[in-house]
Amino acid sequence: MLGRQCWRLLTRPNSLVARILKAKYHPNTNFSQASIGKNPSYSWRSIMAAHDLVLKGSRIRIGNGTCTLIKNDPWLPDLSNGLVSSDLDDDLSVATVKTLFVDGRRELDVDLISSTFNERDRNLILNIPLSQRNEEDVWYWLANTSGVYSVKSAYRLLLGEVSDVAGNMWRKIWKLEVPAKVRNFVWRAASNVLPTAVNLRSKHVSLNDLCLVGNFDKEIVLHLLVDCPFARTCWIKSKVGFFGIYSSFKDWLQALFRNCTNEQCWIAVMVCWKLWCNRNNLVWQGKCDTAKQIVNAAGNLLFQWQSAKSSVISNQVSSDPCVGAVAWSPPRVGWLKCNTDAAVFANEGRVGLGSVIRDESGKFVAALCCNIRGNYSPRDAEVLSIREALSWLKSMKLSKVIVETDCLQAFNALVDRKCPLNSFGSLVLDCKCIADSIGDIAFSFVRRSANSASHFVARAGNSLPGREVWRSVPPSWLISVL
Image (cartoon, rainbow, N blue to C red; front, side, top):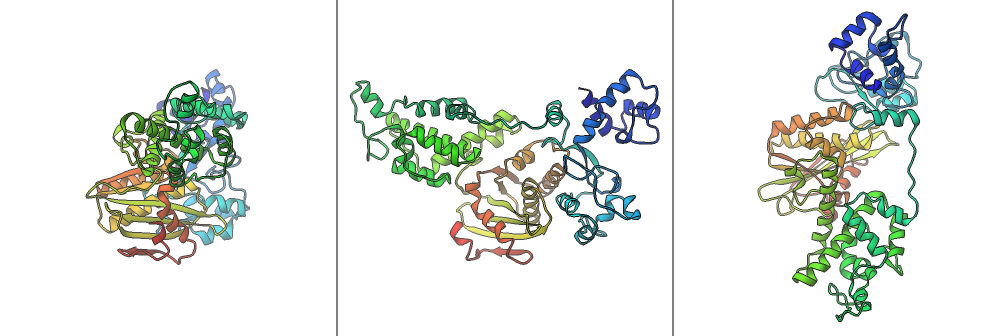
């Protein structure tokens, strides 16, 4: 809790308490350079006990660069050491970060940075995205994604991260980040206690034990959720894929946990749940959805649950049936959809940005591909791609556009009223300002499988020179993924 007081003194230097303490204990320095001094009060001694911990996790977000010293201020986004480690000449040692900008432009001078700093510092500096707005340098908390100090993140920083390795398959089921009813369903499926036709027959219920969806084989759990031709189509559309032949659903589930990422596992169990719901609808109502409807409904349900859990998405946005979709779907009538993505080429020190615009019928309208220099994080690169797409839309005077991304963190930040304090938040604010100036811009989130076209364009940024724009007719290498 003392860390909170330190954080307030660091980020609110003009508050009454901060000015009083400054006048008494560090009149000639700022709070980051303050010391306990002589004859401190009990309050000041207690605050300074947390001073080093707060500074360890705090960094300066570069705005206009006029208030941050290159050598002496912690502005590099590295949790182990935020200070520059390169040997600098006397002039640069006392210069501000603005010295590293290209004259008259809000852009880092890559040539100057490459010739001045060592490899570690150079990579960290080029990883810092700059806002297009003229804003002041501010402190942010590097130890969590929001950029705001919290007791939990400070405690974890103090003790170090401890990875939580899941135990056996049953523990992994209960640790799935999906609705509780879905976890319970998966446990029942793995335990083979779902009321399938075969299981009901074993309980002396008189009914046809063939699968109603495909009518090819007996309705056991593995066939219904995995092996049925209809289920296989769903798995292929979900991009989880159909992999291997297994003797039971439990074996298939173990292979899923072993071979897939966490997000793929979440999507997979949601598809299983929707396949079961579809089977029940067919039994009791005679209705059967298409494979595309099932995978999109699975993604949307997962997104709604994640949004409700985090409590950051508005009801209007989270109720959109296309949000969280697993397969691409066209926009509503009269609107366009612009999918955006970014590809980080770490070895080349570049980032590819791609955008693809399609209309309500799915027809190609335009595409943009460009690459920028810098070693940005994937999250920052995604927001840079959205900012570039919005600027492009504004230059073409297009409105009524749904901007769609597969980066959930970027989407959450774009639709939330608050912006993080870090560099990521600065880029998000850029996007919001451009969107407001255009008008009739909506943001949407989809799974990566529904964003393949823009991903393909972004990947092409590593081989295409400069900036490329296609209108009406897509390039030949993009047709196959549209």
